[in-house]
Length: 157
Image (cartoon, rainbow, N blue to C red):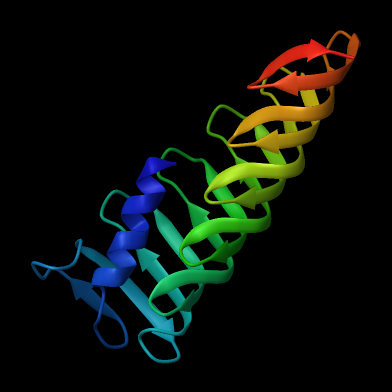
């Protein structure tokens, strides 16, 4: 998700009209189009590496509902605020894992459900991209562990 921060910086650097190819010293090369003025409205932006963002922009930053598709086949669909994943959303990882829930500051924060590629699931509280707080971990085999998690580890009931 660190690449996500680079995208935010890129939106600050973009200051062109309509549909264009950005290759200035300030901007990261890419192709984009937008509706509204070039700082607010809706935008579609494609980076040279294949990443694509389509959604709202406010003050030249991703804001509102949007979809970010990464070249590694992972994606985020949901709310953005001030250039970061914030609010409700779904993050699909390239390995097949999927998180549905709340985000803050580009990380899983709040309540959500993480389904791992191997079929295991965790439903409960997250903080800073880790299982933190009350939750239920269900193994693919059917074994269920309920209780408190801290920094991604079960710590007790």
